[in-house]
Image (cartoon, rainbow over all chains, first blue to last red; front, side):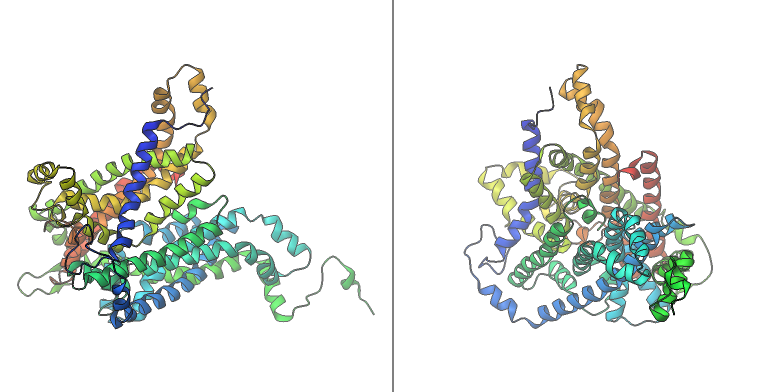
Length: 270
Length: 317
């Protein structure tokens, strides 16, 4: 008799207030991008304008930071895709000694605070006299991106029945054919989703990057400097809005790709 | 002429050397798994574990107070420095803040997770999911930036208090010792709000998953046996959802513990652990002390994870 699906009013109000608390600040970012005010964070905005979009478009430092961020994220995602899938395949197919340890090792870079990953990489670079470069940033990013791909791939492998592989083999396919025609198509969307989340994660990363970038500026580093010493508030407003959009699209796409059963994997660990 | 082998169940290899390789792997699955794991484990082992261990090793070195150079001999002197009052202060402050942020996160996250797990259906379920995922995955710095806009003196929060005629309330709050300050953006209250905003979303999904796993007929049974809705919530649902809350708290607690950017941007000038690590390895050049400081959150998290495991939180992950 109590199974009717009506939420108590108090719960509805609390949940709505919670969602408002989560979403309103993001909406504010969109509004500020159009504000005419350029010296303070004044609310309400004295007027609305599109001018700052043009100003931002012509800023070389913003473009350079954006390019570096996209390149780093792309390379890190590819590395994470390869390693994450390989580990997931090895771990999910069989049971062997040290399996749990390997899962722990993959999750560790995310489970420990980012500052620890950052400072250990920085001190290792110092010890070995490795100068900061594009590759030092990638080294850090790929390490914590592996877990995102791994989580998505492991969830999919779990749903992939061993009998499918056996059937392919019985029908005469060899190991590589089975992989190409049976496993890969089944894995496809999970890898795409994992890859996009890894991209979003790397594109946004700042804590590890401050330790591994040296003088280079990724977009988050550019934003961090603006946050500490605001110089061009209107440009920062526009960049902030664009960053929100750029990270939202992969999330939306990943949501549609993994709909049905394994949604929670997308949120595991950031 | 057709030989017998061609008609048997086992087909001859038709794909040249590639087929040979494949057959070889089929006969020895262990070898294939080994080859799949080697590159990734080399990467994680050398790049990640290697640097981590090198860092830990350095925490056992010490710095010469006169020359400022690092003495490469093993000692516990640097760890002793952690117990100086000013360093102990930093550790206590950070842990307290992480604890309070975690508690507040649970209070805000629970109704959202409960609503999404029990009552949202169809279109609403998708909306809830996106409403949770977008803030969760939105750029960290943009979220901090949004709060810089909100907490600014000329920003929306002060404006709202003014319009509601509640400026006295805000001023009274800021006049309080410890949690107050000259303005919201340089007080612990501001730091707390930003921490809460940035790390709270990580708690929702584990709680939601835990609530979804509670069978509805348990609640029906409780109602049939005469429990009021309030009783069946506190006696049945809440205890079963608790592992999910603890699992979620691992994220909020750990992430708040290691954050050094938020207190640097919003807050007074008192250090948190992350800032201490950052400044010791940077301008001060005291890598051993910085390394020793990073051991603190690792230890705290170790204890926390151990307690969480005993509470059964890992099954809820």
